[in-house]
Image (cartoon, rainbow, N blue to C red; front, side):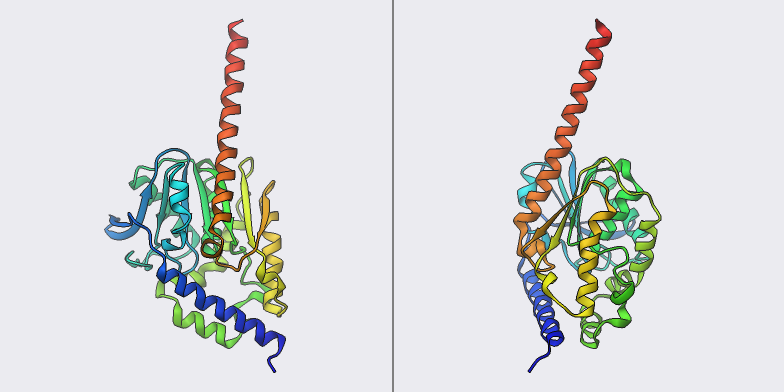
Length: 289
């Protein structure tokens, strides 16, 4: 009879395989490739309006993860999604694969496409860590933040350290990850430390979507991951945490939750802008009296 730990591992393996299948089936019309710094970058720009919503994929994930989300958001405003270097048809690069390098590449991509800040940043898994780093590094570029079962900056510390992973999980990552993704995983602790060294984003709407289904797992590795899943909201003053009836792959399993969260942040940004304009108008009228 399988032990509780082995059952948990089997469920995680099944979920991992399901994600691979769903990723392969997803598609988005309008995806194209352009050159940036002499390197091809696969991306999509759709919709019109501000603030633009910018998507960052998880480890090894492609922009097709957002296939059910992008069209809905593009009806309201500009959207941008892309594949990081070494993923999809985006060419590899010799540049470092830490959060600093990836954030700078994303900013150059946005400028190259004429998409001006401020942005609503949306990141899933490791992409969530990159977006947290971006928001702290360039708060003036950010209108709001949506984290989709995001990686915690200390995800690989404590019981979550890679040395504590079961052998089958290490092998699965080794076999499935590209060279670029493996480098991103290796740089994760440095990215997390760099993020925590920066002051938190304040005064901007932040929604944290967290996967509910993994919370029932009881292995030591799962308990550590779930503690960090619960704690991440506290890294963002004033953030709202929403528990989603989903596994880790929320953009594939429960895309409507992501759409709702982005709409909530967009509406909050627009409301703040309207209030600001109203305040300025009142001040002008007071001066004119």
